Image (spheres, rainbow, N blue to C red):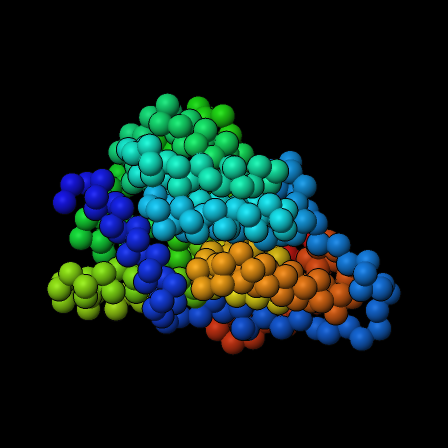
Length: 364
């Protein structure tokens, strides 16, 4: 099997495992430790609640991103097509999975291009791995990624744990920061960094100061675990030791709730997306209150369209956004500004994390 075949095979394995197996981290997001203080005397009608916001200068209907997870194979192209249709209908941003395969094969590129065809009026996020940046991704190739989906933003995804667990992985990051700085200064769109389930600590965030990135997706622990997925792949390949190692790292990383606070302690104003185990509209409200500008969802939306098509995805997003609006209303607000200053109580492990790491929760 050549390198291109390995990429395609791996992508379909990731997708099938994600939609059919239990692939969530054994750790939690810590969002369960965040409690809103319910307000029973309200100043607005529910119909007045407005959760629209801005994403890199584009007005969108809600602080929710359909996060990049797949692409590069016929099956993933069908998934991307349905996700894009939903992004356009709900007028929210959408990302794609790593486009590396699209640089190597025109037919693979089509599985990403469908996003600009089905979602022409919403922000689109291109995607490439940190390993490729570290190994010298050219500006020309980066622009091909952007052109492929007519992207408004380029995400560089960080996945060191996954790379070391993949038999065919490329844990090559020595030149990453230099490559990232060159990329940021050269490409035609803003560059953001996107973690993929391992979370983000402030020590890592500090290394990005001065490089010029425009956003961070914290990709916290508590949602999809690529350690779990790589463990399932290792089992399929008969790699018993690697399967055991992957299992031992199933709870590794910085939980989503803590990741938001870690990054905000370094970048108080950068656009911040919180993915990683966000599963409903109440949790969307929680990550916004903790300091994120957007929540990101990948696995639950992908599962909803895989099993139920566009109608299944529509039902899921309708429910999620209705829950978000209800949460805003019940904290006494009518928009996201009100949500960001709503009173909350923090308990349990998240409280312990905040104390030991000397973090704060901002009220805007």
